[in-house]
Amino acid sequence: MAATLRHAVKRQFAPSTQFCRTFAAMGKPQTFSIYRYDPERAAKPFMQDYTIDLKQCGPMILDALIKIKDEVDSTLSFRRSCREGICGSCAMNINGKNGLACLLYIEPGAAPIEIQPLPHSYVVKDLVPDLTNFYNQYKSIEPWLKRKDTKKAGEKEYYQSREDRAKLDGMYECILCASCMTSCPSYWWNPEYYLGPAVLMQAYRWIADSRDQYTEERLAWVNDTMKLYRCHGIMNCTNCCPKGLDPAKAIVHLKEQVAESHNDGWKYMMTGEIAKNKGRESGMMYM
Image (cartoon, rainbow, N blue to C red; front, side):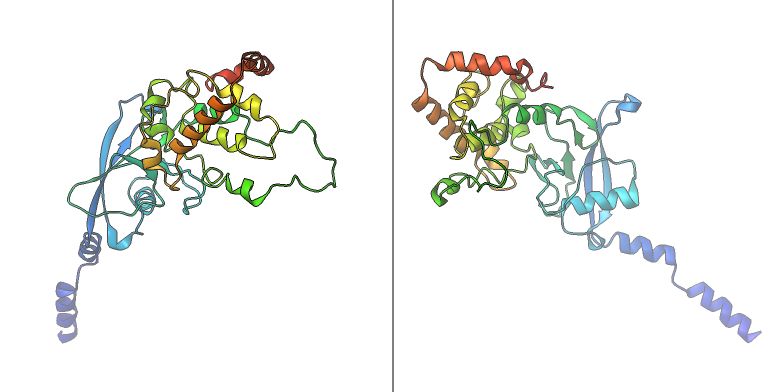
């Protein structure tokens, strides 16, 4: 009888496991308001709130997204890969500013942290933007070393002085995350023709490369009212770059070099470049 009584008392006053889990989950709650859109359901986009415990989550926005997907809602879609700010996959708009979710710390507060896909881009699903146009525009600048005389296999590499190599600093580090592109109002207005800050910076990266022998052809091709001169120096690109680069500065240098090097023969040179690949003229049509 005594043993039975002790067992009943123990069960009555034993701590509830379910209550403990609920209490722990609310140790340091933070709400995230996340953009949701599923094209297969043909529903309008909406913002959905999720509340998680920051004590059981890593410090970055990406950690919160992974926790939500793993433990709360497995239907949430977003891109991520390296978690180190190298791949650029997790670029998104966080509290109104573009950036990489893996590099941005969670800043706790009473207001929900708002997370949306990169602005003014077509959305594949939830936080996944369609970057086809951006990558096609990047392809259109032919971002590789072009030579008119090439070395045979086994010969020494193309020499570049330290001074010439230093000219590429601040441009080659671009990870093509498209944060700057989708923060630029000029790109919002003319995404099919204006190349945008990231692509123009990479165009100048090859123009400034002393080893490249197609400098004049590259300058002639980019010297266009829509491709280059839609940039009005708004500086959103430089302000939001997660790698601390300065696309606006590169565009200024590109315009300066165009002005210094321009000659009347460029229009024929540009016609020749266009004739080589007509689809190159627009990122949306480039194949």
